[in-house]
Length: 151
Length: 151
Length: 151
Image 1: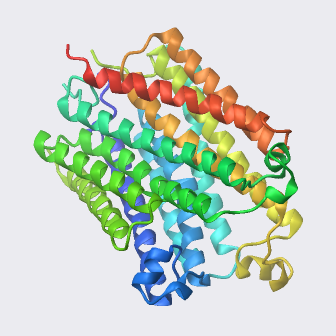
Image 2: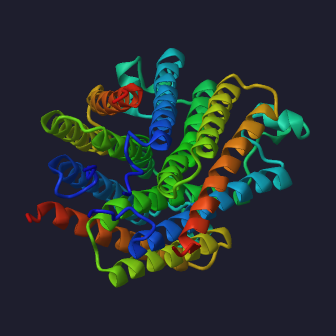
């Protein structure tokens, strides 16, 4: 039986849950960015500026740029985590060890978003970024080791 | 039998088809960006500018920037859709409901690309972006609900 | 038996290995970017600049920008490759043909990173980018053809 990618597999169920939390969190940053563009009247495109007051609103704003950077960092870290995780779940990890990887990554990325958007004092954001990266690398290395195993 | 990720499963076959359409569309934006860089002689890197006329061509152009923004929005929305969809297909959705999610998302993102590249009057682009996001969130929520189900 | 996504399937094992190599390579670019920010004292955020000398270090540096562009190109190409590949492995490709797709893509993207970071003379980087894109498109087209097959 190779039903690792199955909601009856507790490791997969846990992985699916945290992945959806992380992706919905990413979408929230996207929505926040849009709201900040409207509230600060800072648009990227002339057609948007025209609708909201005029061409002078094609401009940038530090708060918008900060949200854009938060989102980009999510793309660079959360999307790879979900991809690595699919292989990791298929590598039959210990359920307990896997669950802690997923929880720690999710906590680190939630902290990263808060630290970024609220401009918390360094190195809060860097530490949460590093914690997430270490979890992802740990999972990727375990997948690589599984590809070397012969059984 | 848990063969959800199987081309004999009509829901998966439909999902695979629309995912490939969406990713090939993304690659098309990438190719358009490259062609615009050449036709407007606007390069990011000195080594590229040197090959195409000289260092003064390290510069930006509004059409190139627009294509770059279109591509980035695709990264932020199409990649998460494909990831969410893998979990969603595994959650055994109704075939009809699932197919409509995939079709609506694909139509919304094709419209988004056209609206962005052609600079259509606002809010055409925002509406197509929102339609795609709502579909993705709907799928993600259904996956979360599946992780809560016990059976 | 539909155990395509299984480490006992040599095509999947090979795919998993190269995906992890590519994602770990992406993370390496991320770490290089961070190190370049520190060594050139070029930060995006006031809170980071404050920790490393003062507000005048919120500034950009060509080497940092180059690493950021390398990373973005990876996001645009490596993440779609991994996603396409999951469908491709499920489409039951010839093991030999599949392995060559994975190897060629990985070699192309390693070359792309070296060419970008070292600013190799054009068109080294463009050629490696194009090689990777052609491999991805080849896999995507094979997936589309599989969705049309009835059996």
